[in-house]
Image 1 (tube, one colour):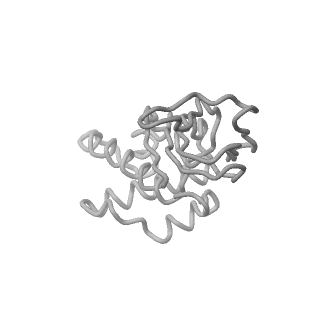
Image 2 (tube, rainbow, N blue to C red):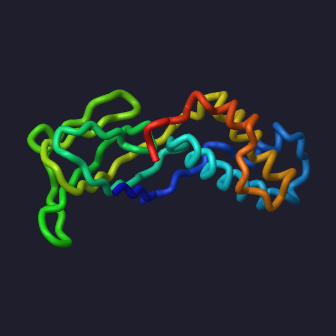
Length: 172
């Protein structure tokens, strides 16, 4: 079992002005719509790629075997804030780094518990500076949503090609 949820949502790194400049939109009538599409496109990219775009706090609940390496989802992970293990029915106890678990890796960190069980990980993750090619893909997706209003469930193949280098293949 694995479940991840956003605890603190990010501020979008892409602005309405960025999108309007790329789409050559000079009027303000659609600013509210574009703001909404920016967020929808970010969420779609995060789901497809398995990465966090914009700094945010996440919590993952996962069942792990002792010494099993587990990639913390939706990196890049900047800080593992807390690690807790299920110690009793409805109770979690705070684990201690290097006594109960280890964390290794650069941007996409691996969590290694020393005992089996259910773990709750709370962590900070996300890009704080948007890579240029990821920004281009995000703008293209906002443009797709803008031109195909009501079709925000689609991730076009050309956008997928723009951002594929960021896809984490071993996450959700």
